[in-house]
Length: 397
Image (tube, rainbow, N blue to C red; front, top):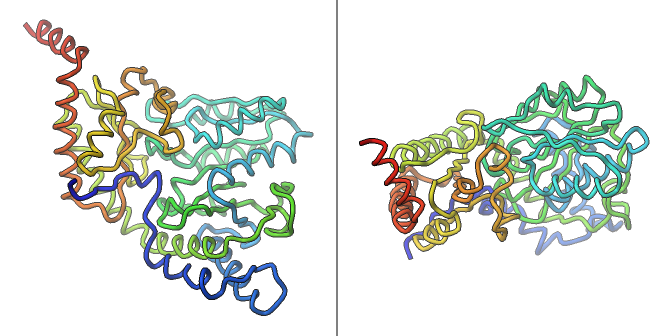
């Protein structure tokens, strides 16, 4: 097999070696439970609180607004179910979009079974939500707007500041799933009118199994996990000290180098996009061309199946995906691609390539070259493509 090229960083990232070194002492030396009373435990407790302060400072929040969780899905569930529980007396209506991660969509569907109403907003062909439609969807009984910061499949960045302003104007809480965006694009809670935000460490070169929920002071949610006083009695369970320390270190490093890394990654991404679109016919770039995450390139190739494409890329040592890692076992086309208006037959031929700061121009060229050959080979076996080419030839005569 050829040298591996990993282009599935939206699914997970490699652990930064500096992060690993920061975590090691809390596995081997300072392994105490931070909720114990003896002196040894205070080392772990101090590390957790310093991590909380670090993350808060990076997003313009207060330390007591940061709650540690097991990752993005838990944070999304806590935010949405927590608001449902806390504010059901005011109303039972929520607003989200059709392109959210399933951690949001499935939670909303669960609440619908409990008597809540959910408005699922459409998006345009680039994946952007309409601010006018959002404002028109707000009702007297609306208690929460949950719209992702950036889409995990097509990379489109939503107008978060404007959404926050609309929510604040109408007195509605605003939650954003920022799992793909945190540490990849700038964000300050004190500037964006965000009430709740979800993030996950393994999307920015931190460890798996740890994340956080930003919960603005004044938003009074009840306990999400009962059984202990951890996280100010709202999320019971022994603190994952190594994970929390690692997440804070990863976030600190990512934000420190964000501008430089984003510029570098986007240059490689744009080179890859330009080559693919120029050299492989009947190919579409999904997502907004400019308002997108710096590492995201999502394509649809007509007349082929994405699964076959992934297998053949894997044989060449190229790791990619057709969409969200959480739905990788599904044979259905991406709900995101259907929501932006693509027909099933085109949505089935999707490919998501998500780069890292380590991805080089040479690797981008190798991927583009491989894609050309693979797509050509797969189309040569497609009767649909053969019929299409014949019709094109007849039309040109």
